[in-house]
Amino acid sequence: MPVDDAGGTPDWNVRIIFMDDIEMIERLARAICKQKGIAPDHHHPEFGTQWQATAREAKGLLIVMLDPTDAMIRAGARRAEIDPERARTAYRAMIDAAIARHI
Image: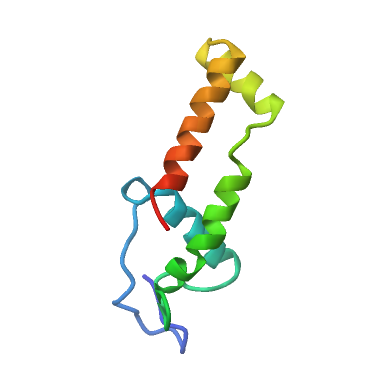
């Protein structure tokens, strides 16, 4: 059960999140918050929640990932049994879709 920062009492304002139900930028933003020791759903004065305050950083990470490495292309092509250029195009389309969703 989620607890508050003060001392272990239940925090009923924290919602349960299933990763299939949220977009990639939110997933990344939540992970960044957790790595920094910040509760993603806690209030942020400017953005509503901490994960929303971190969403631009998450989007930046996705932009960095826009171009796959050669190893990624080869692995995708082998796994999908397609030529490398099609694998690159498919990967890029997925990252483009994730970037275009927010912010």
